[in-house]
Image 1 (cartoon, helix red, strand yellow):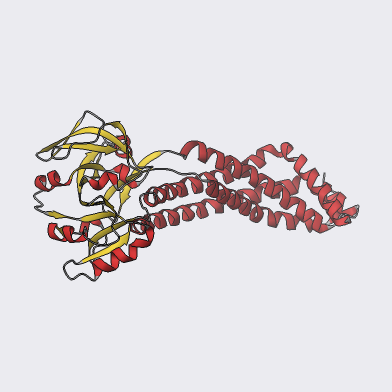
Image 2: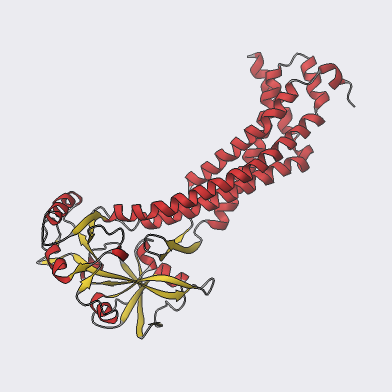
Length: 395
């Protein structure tokens, strides 16, 4: 009990004298805040990208591609194969019409609004069932395109990030011209980076004949996936692989999110070293200016461990202030910021928003406290080991 009283008393004195050392304390606070801003902002990129990809998948939808293909870009399905796939059990039907859309996926060059440099934007050809099987789809502005025409609808993310993709404009690709008649939303999924049109019109423009690249199917239920997949993989008339849509997009997001997180932690670690040295210098200065006070407390019978804990508490308090400021600034500056990046699986752009989540803020604060703990440890030990007679003689 005596130890706790001593520790609490010394800690309160330390914390109350922080304003008197505002200059040196500010160095540690600013340094730690800077590290937290960088860490949280970089990780929010990975969080936003992963969220956009994961929002694209549904447990009641299945994606069918050619066996061995790792993305829609490298896949190919013939018209007869598509007809067979639409006969598979487990596929939901509206009356006698299967809720399945055979689709084409091509890349077109459209300049970015921010940099004016060309970007790879996905142009997806869909069948009439393509919107019905995506329950998250809705028209936000304008109208749905008419099948059989050179009309397109544009995802909200594509409209925000790329030039000329607003309702009423035209998009010129090679010798073809497409009229933008609508703006659609899909709850922030990767589909909002795409431009949609009639698959058969797109076949003619790109001379694809009666071929597609993938088929998206709405299942009777999530449990129908195995029935649907097993029937197709056992059918010798088709050579396909079947994946849950959510698994497909989760796999696509892993490479980039892992890279971003690795870079983010690497940068934060390097900056953290500098912040730790800043904290060490700050706490050494605090111990040096209060050496007589610490020696007096020791002479009065205060425990050395109480002194160590009090110095560490001050260092952690400065770190908490810096971490909180850094997290707040990162949230204000980056949360919801719209951008786009390359999806290396399809070599096309993906529009997404930075996401500064409570988990990231908690991680930033934890990292700040860890820097404060390391930065205060050696000065705290020095304070506990100060020779009492010599420290009392200091002016």
